[in-house]
Image (tube, rainbow, N blue to C red):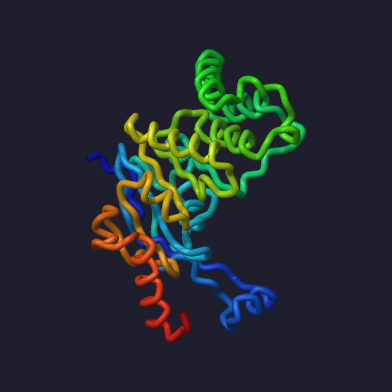
Length: 261
């Protein structure tokens, strides 16, 4: 398989305010989000980052997409450094996060055209890509409807179209089905599997076991910013359910830190 993503020793910390320290119940002034995280992913596979909230999944994906820089380490997308070659990485990657908020007064047509121009797409390529994605996700009927008037599911579909307007080699989705109805969630998962079949590398972060089992070829379990288990689903499960195995790993990590489970 062709290696397309190489994450090497990512470390990232964030300063904690007094209020955040009270919430976290800690005296530490820093939060360790990533602690030497490394993994690789390949073309034509779906790689899942599985972990509880606060494990470091989103921080990792933000680094991959060049939104933030690590304190140490690097991530290479098709050979381009996320730390030193941000523009090259952005050409190769499409990033969707649940935190992406579309402005209410724009339309899908306007947003698609705006982001395609950011990626330097010519008019003909833009029109062809828009017809493909708007048709696939049923956006064409709502192309001139303001975002404020779209359903939650349609907003997610528009967000996906915008994220992959430039047909990237690597598709990175942070919690891709959060808050979606069953129909829209299936549309999203079917789309990700289709992209895999086209040879794309798909990275998803989630805490939903059923999603991992449905679409992922390999999975990396992240706890406290560290990769504590990795492999195919069968390798990680070890003959048990993914949920049971995950809670075993999680419990061991808590006990190792002297914390109550």
